[in-house]
Image (cartoon, rainbow, N blue to C red):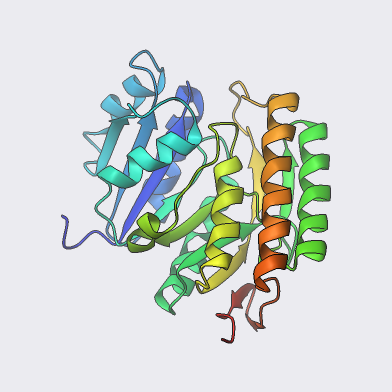
Length: 260
């Protein structure tokens, strides 16, 4: 399996059993390349675990991974990557079924040489539906402001849905606190600073389509995301890496490496 697995789908979960049932069925029906699915949980009491065990008979490359590095998405991603065998890693949320439709386009850009491909909810036909109004509003404003002011390559730096080469992960030292999906914001900034070849694919994000409880907490999220907003603004400006050349292909966006 190690030699044949092209994609490792990594899903951090926190009691997402109700959403996981639907998500796993959709992944099994839509992803055609050899792949594995890693469900990363913090606690052995997580209600996602029985769902994983029940579906492993029909989905043999489905695995549960116990994150013992510490709670939160950032540590879950690190634990998942440590266990992954795929050439590419796709980080995706269990409560958002919309991005699954874009996996083929993301794979296409990776095969064309991208090191990291991000989803975007705010360009090229991307949309966002569901979730808390305040979180949607802050996300839209923050991403558009960061894109314009910093010269960011990606139009949706904070989105959690990202695909990247497994080989680049250790080259990007992730330091975000385990607050929300701030680690995805950090990953986008540091990938640009590292002169990696980036790409974007529009998605329709349907947050909590099937229910479950959100972990959104306004205060801690605003503080951590603001920290990376300012950090990225300063480093992109200071290094002069805030402007990329852009080319377009169909509904996807390929962002070339910076000219040295």
